[in-house]
Image (cartoon, rainbow, N blue to C red; front, top):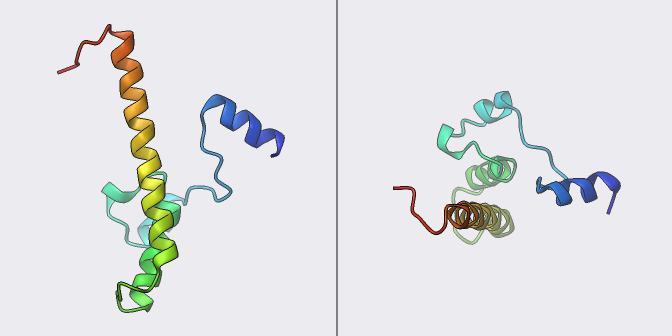
Length: 95
C-alpha cells in the first residue's frame, strides 16, 4: 500500500487504481446522467462488452460482478453515513 492509498483510506476517499472518467468520456460512452457516479469507470467497459457480445447474459460476467459490487459498496457507504447523521441527531429522522 502506497502512502497516497494510506492517506486516502484514512480520510475515507476511494482508493481505486482507476480514476473516475471525465465528463467527456461519460458523454462519449452515452451514459445516462443518473449513472454518472463513482462506479462509472466500471460501467463504461461493461456497456461496451454488452454491446460487443450482443447482451448475452453469460458474457461479461466479471465486468458485471465488479460493477454490481461497486454499487453495493457505495450503497453501504450511504447507509453508514445516514446512520452516522441519525446518531448525531439523537435518533431522529430527517423527514
